[in-house]
Amino acid sequence: MDIIEFTSIMERDGCIGNDKDFCGVYGDIPYSVAFVQGRKGGSVAFYLRIQFADKLPSRMFSYLRQQTKAYVRLQRLNTSKGLFCVLVTTKKIWPFETAYDHLFDEIEAVIDMLGMKIADVCPICRQGDCDSFAFINPVYQKAHAACVHNHNADIQAQVQQNEMTGSYGLGAVGAILGGLVGMIPSVALAVFFDLISGWLCALIPLGAYYGYKLLRGKMSNGALKIIIAVSIIAAPITLYLIELGWSILEGWGGFTLLDYLEYMLIFPEDVLPALLQVLAFIGIGFYLVYKNVSKNNANVWKEASISEAMLRPMADLSEEA
Ligand SMILES: [Zn+2]
Image 1 (cartoon, protein in one colour):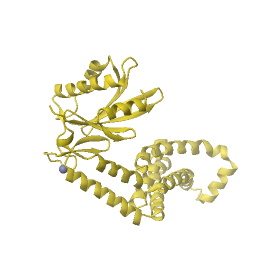
Image 2 (cartoon, helix red, strand yellow):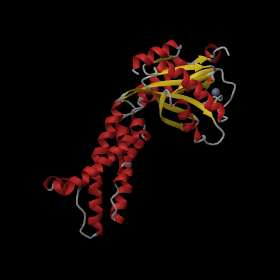
Image 3 (tube, rainbow, N blue to C red):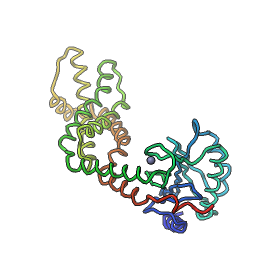
Image 4 (cartoon, helix red, strand yellow):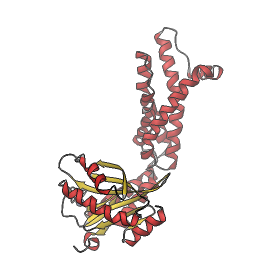
């Protein structure tokens, strides 16, 4: 399946959306569908928000797979906070168009069978009697139009505020302080217990990110560059602090960062393996915060605009039973 086929079917079914995300209503079940480009072709992720009593029955995935294995390959099922997401790839002999209709019947049957239902409380005020379908990334769901309007307006006001008063300078100071705090566990463990844990270095970008946010750094494109720069510079500094701690504990006295950098240049083979290891784990930490950092002002603003544009009164979209 490719994106062109996917888009044409979504449009045929009267789904609203743009690019790779579409929202539709099946009976009175709101759902969103996203196209996911993979190496071997496209797959499709379905999102629904469901309500279940305690935790999601684990047999749900196996049951759904059993029921649908003739025409789709179920790749993954994620559930968190009542959000149900199933990622499917259609099989070659079954065109997506046919599989899509079948799959929905099966999903509905499974939800029924396991005594669950589509969430009917507003995700914002947690009250019932919803009047609209709203796209709150990534899922189309029942909500109150007034709540969604206010929610989106609040988000856009915050973005505007950050654009006006957010500062790269203060953000950079925050990132540096946060990065230093993120170094403490790695340095302390190494100096006092002789344990070098790469994983703890992953806390450095996390610290830099939260420091940046805490000091109201401007959440535009520069944020990403500042957090990357601080995280990379933090690598040799972490090693320096560890060596310094060891040296002081052994009674050899201290030395400056400049001394250490000079030593690094003269004897790179002594330092390089450790430096690369620290950088690798900083990379892992960065991967963890990337999703947050990439939620910059422009993206958050756009998401709120899309949500606003996709808001529909429930009466307009529910099909006649
Ligand atoms: Zn509400």
